[in-house]
Every structure is written in C-alpha cells, then in structure tokens.
Length: 77
Image (tube, rainbow, N blue to C red):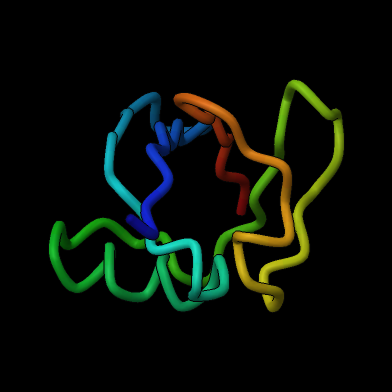
C-alpha cells in the first residue's frame, strides 16, 4: 500500500481533517486532491511538521519523508 495517514490542522480556523495521502505523490499534489474532495482551501498553504519543527517542501514525494503512523501537520497561510 502506498498510503500515509495524515491529520491536518488549520491553525487559524481550528478545523481538523484526517485523510490518507498517496506517498508516491508530492505534498502539493495530495493537498490539491484533498481540496477537490472536501472543499477546504488547502492546496496553497504552508505545511508545518510540529514534531520535526520544520516547514515541509511541498514538491517532493511523501515517501522521501520519514513518516510513521498518524502524522500531524499544521497548515498556515
């Protein structure tokens, strides 16, 4: 299986979305698909990993990140 369990938290508006992302796609591609499915404006947002304390590069495939279990990512404008 090529999926990663992700919990996205919008820091400003305080909503949370849980989804499976395809690890073969980049973060920006997964966010574009999620935006089409749920209608939330997420594809152009900055993505922060609070565990690693870094903003993630949106243009590399997710499989290049070391992601284990449920991953919490925060969205910023």
